[in-house]
Amino acid sequence: MFDLERWEEIFDTIRKNKLRTFLTGLSVASGIFILVILLGIGEGMRNGISSEFEGDASNILYVWTGRTSVEYKGLNPGRMVQMKNRDFELTTLKHADDLEYKSSVFRIWNGIVNYNKESGSYRVEGVLPDYQFLENSSMVAGRFINHTDHVNYEKVVAIGNKVKTDLFKDQDAIGKYLQISGINFKVVGVYTDPGGEREESRVFVPLSTGQRVFAGGDNVNNMAFTLQKEDNFEAALAASNRFSAELQQFLKEQHTIAPEDDRAININNSLENAKRFFDLMDMIKFFFWGVGICTIIAGIVGVSNIMLIIVKERTREIGVRKALGAEPWSIVMMVLHESVFVTAIAGFIGLISSLALLELVGPMIETNYISNPSVNFTVAVSTVFILVIAGTLAGFFPAWRAARIKPIEALRDE
View 1: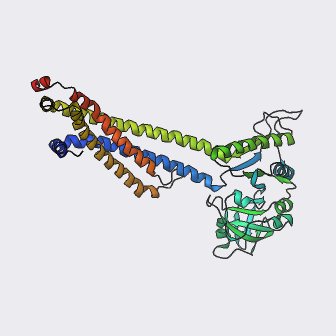
View 2: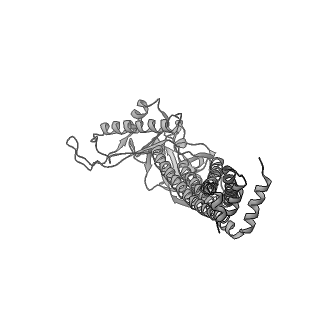
View 3: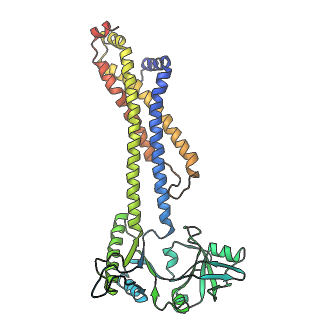
């Protein structure tokens, strides 16, 4: 029930102690402000890390080889392992039901690309049609490398948007011919990539063409795969780890590599990388919650101390109230109301200020690892509950002390 007289008492006490109330509220407001800002930064870090994984397909696995580090079956360590077309073909045949997209890659080193008087050094790679989806690229004009290009050893090329801008300027590149290391290729497509200019500084040719024209034989430098979608992240991660282990074992058997050799075959599992980053983000978020809660606790202690002082100042008044028949619970509620009111108002000011700051400044923050820091509705609701609990805790112990004051002792108080 709304008690007008009680609220008049609360406002009267606040008016008489403006500075004390302001400083008390400031400690609570700053605690909520710091908590929300820290959580916003934590969310911004999660957004930034997530965007780093958008450059490629989310569940992609890259495979490359190095040198052996362990002697095995009479073969000395230090052998360079070279993957072949057959490795890719057997892998895709064995895991046909598990794979979504797949491609092997033959890299042409020191590829110089020319168009008329313009020239540049770009990454030139022979790939299969699925590589567009593995790289999460989208076409700006024309098309990507297709199956017919690969089967017929066509001299066609799909270029990145930056390559097109560098070499062709404002001209339409589709249908024109450029030279890669002096050999003519027809431009059939221009692509863009969420990874930015670095990823758009590449030139793709059909895998078979690249191997034949640039004397690659049946060698491949990399293999890339994505697996079929799973119901949740944990299931996808388990399937990805299982595929990685089986593929590594298969390639070691194919190339006579010791099972314990961890340098010869390398697999970069994007889901495993994502899990490590997200686990780190969860730890950082937990740390931010801890710092914010500790700051709020400091504010609660301040409010509680102030309420103890108020109870001490009003000892005679409380004694008179109890002598006139006031119940202990009414004394408790009198103190709690003031505590919750001061804490809630100050807390809401801190909450609204922090949300406003994140709303105004957040969209402007775009770094490698922090992007659009913000807090969601759940966090905002959580801070409201924290405010209520904080106000109750801050006032409960002073209120309980006030309720236990004996009238006769209170009336003797000076």
